[in-house]
Image 1 (cartoon, rainbow, N blue to C red):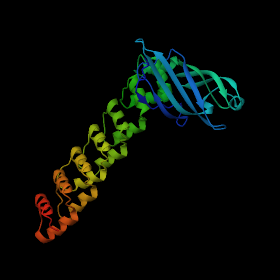
Image 2 (spheres, rainbow, N blue to C red):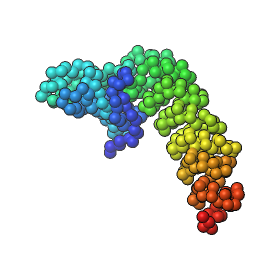
Image 3 (tube, rainbow, N blue to C red):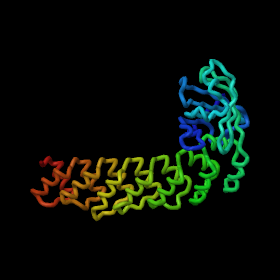
Image 4 (cartoon, rainbow, N blue to C red):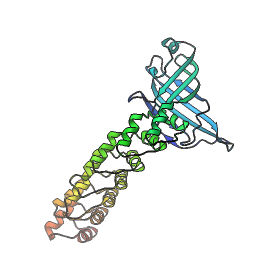
Length: 326
């Protein structure tokens, strides 16, 4: 029986920014057996400067099942060290090339046919990289983890930048951080926006959900919000904009992340809150705004009613709306 794990990560074959653009990688997150050869495949358009490189491993996990790991990346031809220009253009050529990363090297052999081809590869870990990880407090990284670090373009400079910011990842944490594009600049931005002392899981959750420093800063500016990482994820998932928090803060009622989510779910926008304030109802809380929204009571309609009857409570406005007054 063949078991293909569903774990999905993004892979980037990059020693430096821009060296490769990953499409995807799938496979077992923690138990890649890098001691066995894998297979590679290259797809390309004739004459193109970049190629689609696909790497795959299959191995028996000891329980009678077969596990699969794969990665597809858009790679510059120059990253495949050892392939000559004539071999790229040849109708058929035997090739041997290396893809060198800080944590190790993918050594590949096979055949090319007009710029496309396939073959086998092995991954050779870089001992100096493992020693540098140990020195940084990331100990006992397996060969499989070093291989995944190679796919993610993990550098010792990046590891040091995390340590300098009091983020202390394990080997697996480091891979997850790089998978989701976390950089030192991203951490600095979050801290400048008020998110201090985040742990690895919190940082990854913020990155996964697209919570950037600008969004955090905007939510805190001119509002009484002091959102936690969980609050920020919740707000981002529901599409809450900073403008809504800012409008709510202009009243005398306090508002929290749950209130903002409730308003967003029921379609109460920043312009709606502003409209209520301009209609003379500046201090409506989230529950009152939602109740008015559910019953179709708009600020413009309420303004007309209040010109006739004076300032009305939310319950009075809803009652008149239900009764059909216009």
